Image 1 (cartoon, rainbow, N blue to C red):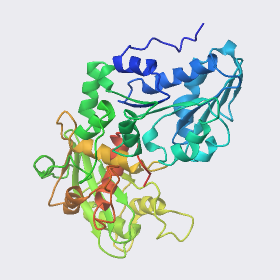
Image 2: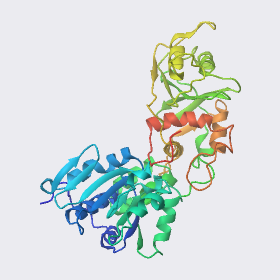
Image 3: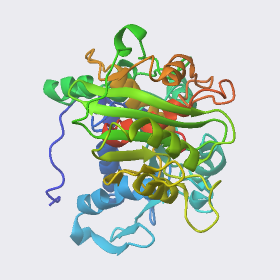
Image 4: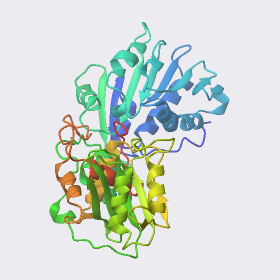
Length: 430
């Protein structure tokens, strides 16, 4: 008897073709929440319950150990019939079956973790985020034991035209390989698809839910439009004031906004061209806003915090909170009585932050929910219009080509992703 976790899956045609394929290596590009990882988990359990070889070993891998554990571990334990499991090793993320097979959950941030032992099969999920060299240098050799060649599934959502795209594109023409592709709409109900369309920008929706190999080249904020996103916006004393920080020395920057019914409205900025620090940026904010705003102040920004003006164990966020609360004695400006910090423990992936901003600029349903006053925040406008991404379709911002840009949209992006997140994976946290 299989556990209750084995609920019935919809028999989508492309997924049935995947299950029945004789190919040794199968590359699967599917939309979000469309069942690709679930089918891979079941494939692993079936192999462990009916191993063709004595002492068979299988792996379930992801870009990092934490990801692999989150994606696979609890589900694999729930899918495995208890009476057929001989041992569960939590620290090693290893399940041993009475049939003699072993299933190991492993992270590929250090690909050598998978080296040194033969494998009879495995799954690599979120393959677009796995190091491009991991397949040939670490995974493939372990599947090449004489007399018992191992199989492998590569699953995930497209993330630009990178090594995952190359593998998927070439699979159709290689012997022993096969490529598969399906959209979220093949599985999810129409109302879920329409909800996602409203929440995402067109390119991100195409990538995440249609599994399209979108090439994020050119402008980073491709949904920006001066017609849609520029608007004169006045300060509203009934609403909290939001300060967004990005830590630089040249220039020192901050973005000022208010969240309104119509969306996120940028109503100011700070630009200190040279020799800046957190104190100087905060002094400018106090001078510009303390005389008109008495309500709550919310602060967002770079979670890493700089340490340029740190002469003790405090960091930039300690400096900012202290200064905005106590005020400036020299300038005789009082601080705000209600300062609230909204800074996470770590920064989002850069790609996720950019996707969140594009979705706020205009989602796939055409809704616009981010506006900038060009007279009050001209550098924010410059960033939206000029920030570019690296060639290759990764979506990563090219800061070398536009070193005088990105700072203001980076600061704003920390707020947008914190309160209106769109997650689709990314290349690095910055």
